[in-house]
Length: 166
Image 1 (tube, rainbow, N blue to C red):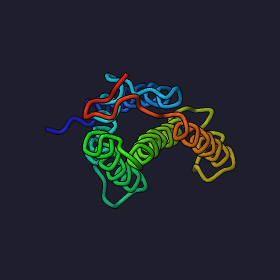
Image 2 (cartoon, helix red, strand yellow; image 1 turned 135 degrees about the horizontal axis):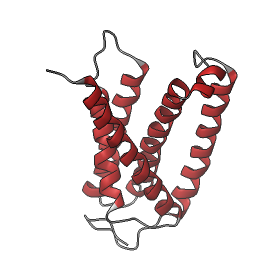
Image 3 (tube, rainbow, N blue to C red; image 1 turned 90 degrees about the horizontal axis):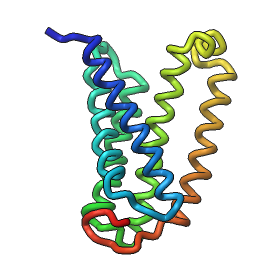
Image 4 (tube, one colour; image 1 turned 180 degrees about the vertical axis):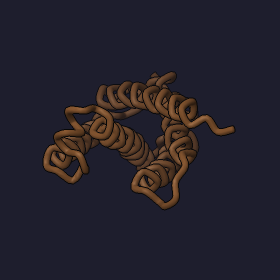
């Protein structure tokens, strides 16, 4: 028997781990470093977040499914850039953009969930088409564009090997 409450709890915990690991990975990229433990944790838990998102009952394709599918495609490319291409040449920048974009998608969904679950935010934007929601999402997008550009400029791994360095 499918226990929706337990499944939701697992999905939320996986998502929170992905967000925490994403924060660490983004901070590392901005410092020009690749963290050996945080990077695989971020990639695995972000993949799991997207995959478990498809496990909820639904009767039509929702925006969350589109975001999840895009995230999985981007993660596949980022994982290849890191482990397959070993960040050689242009793959370094592809990895940075992919990792930051996957992290952005996690934060985007977090904002959606906060506006759905936190009473004050829900009151400010009950249908998520109101200005407070749009302004918040725009601010998050702008922040991620700026952070991704900075990470792309700063991240230069010391060694390009199959396993992340530093």
